[in-house]
Structures are given as structure tokens and as C-alpha cells.
Amino acid sequence: MSVKLGKSAPGRLIVVAGCMVLSAGFPSITSATHEADHRFMVEGYVCGEGGVGASNVDVLVKDTRVSYGQVVKTNGDGYYKAMFHLHNDNLGDPLLIEARGEQKNLKIEFDPKDLESDRKVRVDFGVACSGGSSPSWVWWGGGAALVAAGGAIGMRLLSSGRGKAKGKSQGKKRDHR
Image 1 (cartoon, rainbow, N blue to C red):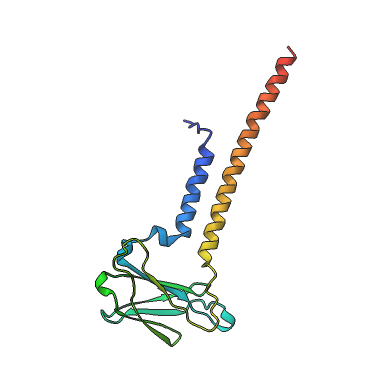
Image 2: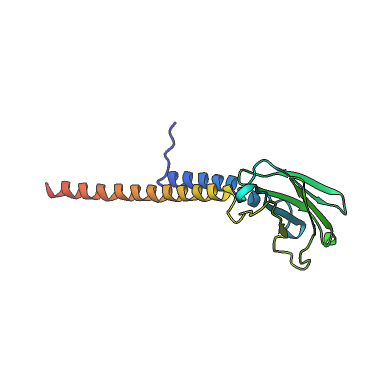
């Protein structure tokens, strides 16, 4: 039994593959488990000499009022992210962030009336931390999207070129009759 695929089957395959790559490249979009008004994110960079990101460093992030914390590791760029499930009554809670023996103490701050915007704070560690660059998953995800778009455009151009060639050759056959 054979299955005949329509003209757009390669295009559909590219779109599906592109969506899979994007969902893997942007885990924060696909793995959000709470509404924005219940999430609080602590993110930043841990940097070594010359502002270079330090990889595989443990970062402790702890809400000391409720004694809840987590340890996350930095990626290859020195970037870390810790996500908490918080409510409006956590506003003003003391927050401890520690990396490489350096501690920073903050208070959890957000607008309790804003139920749409992400609630987050950025805390960097190290001298001359150049955390302005995007995490590597942004570059990989963007590159994958460009490759998928280029493939889709290439397939479209190839398929439209074949249709024109067939039309011209059929026209020549009619002139010989």
C-alpha cells in the first residue's frame, strides 16, 4: 500500500520540525507551570575574571521568610535562572542569593495589581559581569528558526521552478505537431 503525499507535505514536515526545535530552544515558554501572577523568577550571571561567564557554578536562591530555596547551576555562559511559585502575600519577603561565597540580600518586589507581567529580578555576581549578552539557547533557537525558514523558502522555490519547466517543455511539443 502506498500513500501519496500532497504538494505541501515537505513544507508541513519543515513546519513541524521547526516548531519542535523552537519548543526545545525556548524551554521557558513551553514549561511555564503557573500564571504570571504566581511566578517569580530570579536570574542573572556569575562571572569570573574579565567578565567571562563562569559555568557549572551553584547558585542558592532562598525566600528566607518561608524557608524555601533552591540551588541552580549556571550554564556555559554563566547564566542561571530560578523560578518560584509565589503569591501576593510574599511581597516584601527577604530573598537571599548566594554564589561562590558571595551573598546578596534583597526583598521580593513586584506590583501586586499587575497580573500579566513577569515578576522577576536580575542579580549578577562577579566583577565587570557582561551579562548583557543573550543566553546561548537564544542563539541556537534563532539559528534553528532561520534554518527552518530558509528550508521552507528553498522548497517553495524548487517546487515553483519545476512547474514552470514542465509548462515550457509541453509548449515545445505542441509546436512540433
